[in-house]
Image (cartoon, rainbow, N blue to C red; front, side):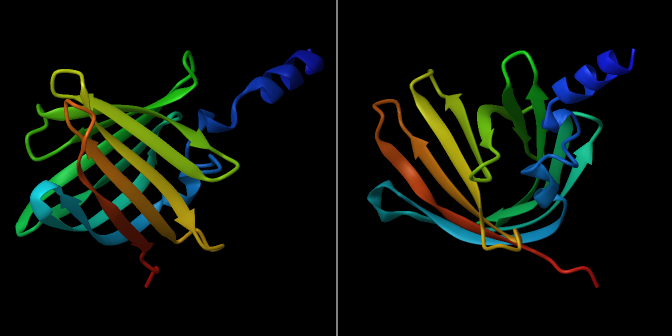
Length: 169
């Protein structure tokens, strides 16, 4: 019986509890972010965010906060879950109107501590890709590279958002 228990424990993936997952455990806490996305015709979108990350049950993670795009501030929420069947992560992004969501799928590299998410949008030919990576040994800075592509595969908007973990008072 002890052998069976040991096999079960060893076979349980590290991401069964995302609060201890090699990548997501660093997302726990309060963050502030700023960056800009540059688009076609030289349009510029400035972004600021304030958000909190926390584990949600055994295989979920929540990121909730506010995002200001240029001068428009809206609440947002990412609900991230691990799909054991596909070994992929699913992330649902919702805004002020929770009925309007964008579904992303992606992978986490525990070696490089990166999360790459992609959503297919529009008529199925356009997409949004987000690549999150930690910078520095303290794991208190996240760099998010964001790329929007159009129906013809052209880049329509791209840029980088820098997230900084806020120190506990």
